[in-house]
Length: 368
Ligand SMILES: NC(=O)C1=CN([C@@H]2O[C@H](COP(=O)(O)OP(=O)(O)OC[C@H]3O[C@@H](n4cnc5c(N)ncnc54)[C@H](O)[C@@H]3O)[C@@H](O)[C@H]2O)C=CC1
Ligand SMILES: CC(C)CC(=O)C(=O)O
Ligand SMILES: [Mg+2]
Image (cartoon, rainbow, N blue to C red; front, side):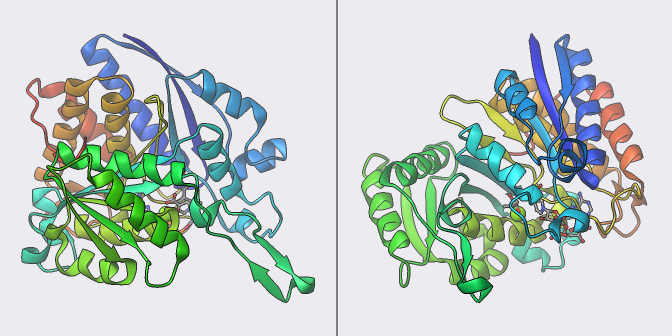
């Protein structure tokens, strides 16, 4: 199969982990006789420096012509301090909106030999396997007005949703749950927010079409607590943009590191942008310390979701699992007795195992 992939490395460790994921995709293409072509485009702070915009028109056009997009991460102190509308996050939010990527799937599953890499107790972490379905193109990050007022002395942000926007993400969550453990937890703040009240009503309505799926509503503050005290009670979590952003970073603690969580951002027709959940990590950028596995697992999600290449995706997941099983890990993972390696070596290990193993098993059961 021939596929054209646009790569948006972005800033900081985004460049390092996207390069790692690209190399793994190249290895998978070679193994399975596919032709993947790659086109690099600018986004984020790097794009501001080069082109004066965090999201150049050329980048948007290239993404629209691609079969899928692989993104590293954007941002860093150099650009974050600039309070103008050219904040690099606009680039990221902009591409999500431009491509209508409303459904952000963030699977959270601990690899067995990472159970003790989490600071949480083993009995809490084991058997946790959940999928956060985060609404990605509405809610608090996109509402207008969002501005300073009174000469900078007051401020407003807006949390707005239409029925349509809520319905389509809630349906995605129920569809995911119906092929998983058939339970949806809808997370909101309905004791305070009007938007959450409508969200709850719609969840109740949509749930009628999925009688095999059980549904519960949970307030976001309690959900934040339960996520790290009894994570195994969750199957699919569906929630508003900012709630999902925060809860997914929290959930990464279950896996031992933020550097382990992949994501897929999908539109209605299956087109997707794939990126690790983490940011550009300026504190370790350029040092070869970045964990490439979140980006590599995001590439596996691309193969599965955008290209229907399930076996290829599973070969990548198996190689990741085996690399960890053999004790290889980057510095972010606390694995006593294992072998600590840099980004490049971790990537090479995954590629070697991908090529060596011709059998596959589905490791990431939480993927849909
Ligand atoms: N999707 C994106 O492009 C995102 C961008 N950002 C941006 O990234 C910049 C830094 O934000 P932070 O709040 O520091 O969040 P961050 O996710 O970049 O880093 C948080 C912590 O996790 C560590 N970390 C993250 N990914 C890692 C990896 N793959 N391997 C090893 N350690 C890893 C970092 O070293 C840091 O200590 C900001 O400009 C922020 O706006 C933040 C989140 C997502
Ligand atoms: C610009 C932010 C919303 C990026 C982020 O933290 C995320 O998508 O997880
Ligand atoms: Mg985030």
